Length: 435
Image (cartoon, rainbow, N blue to C red; front, side, top):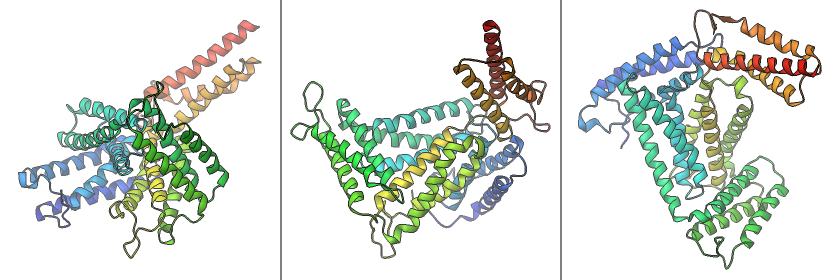
């Protein structure tokens, strides 16, 4: 499928409409003065569906089925961002909301394929589960959702499934008996890069991993990994190659301090900073993350990813300087963190997230009181009861309202509130029985 920079005259108007939609979404993303409403997202979504319908009509001609130009690039950008908006308002179990996740899954699969066997079935299982979940969501929404959107998402999902199948086939040469050892070596290699990719690290951290590798090496018999019954299972070349690769990478880190060439240092600094920010979001996302914030990270990563030439970062002379493996590790790690943040997004609107956080904190405190043996006096329960009562009073006819809107996530919040009341009641009963 070739890419055409020129946009046909009959698609020019569509391109302008898509750019306008992207601008509108950008304005909504940058507006932090108020919470996003589902109605705002739906209005933009309807405009997008109309443009997708026009594109499909133009490209009904068989000769245009594989047409790819700037319209497709902007459409992908818009769908990615709009998908994050669906997550932000709590519509996580809808077909449009899966698009951002699929985009990241595709990038992860691309990198696993490039890694030439440096992965295990444990890396593929979560992706397989996620694709299966997405297919279920799309099939459920198909009768009521726009056919154009369903077609677009199914095509992306099918492409990911083909890639996943190819990766799974690549592992078939390794006997199931050697799967645990393969997983162990993959994990060690990633731990080596996790240490070595830091701006500063202690050599002692790598020495510990070196001892693990030597232990694995010593467990072989005549250079072979044996099964419990003493046989030589298939997959020796893969495991021995991975073991040697771990040694080579580890020795490079130990022997040399400056592993990234000066020409690649700006990319290394960008990726290191992004990884640190994403690591921080993993800890604080419940309180600080707006799903649409991930769009900027996705765009920056894709821009860095796309400057590679034949899979490597090159300098001005077209050479591939040292530091490729570290940059690829950081790039893949950032993609993995974004994927985890997308998957962990809960079906609760941003407008109700502060209430959810308060209820989650109260629940955690009450469970801790229960775990520590219960109440020492009835008064200990008063602050929790008062907090729960204040949250309960926020409801109107059993619903948490924001203005006249009823944001997504009512069921989750009501269940959390009821659970907190139940724990309070149980603690009070236990105290009364003790007395």
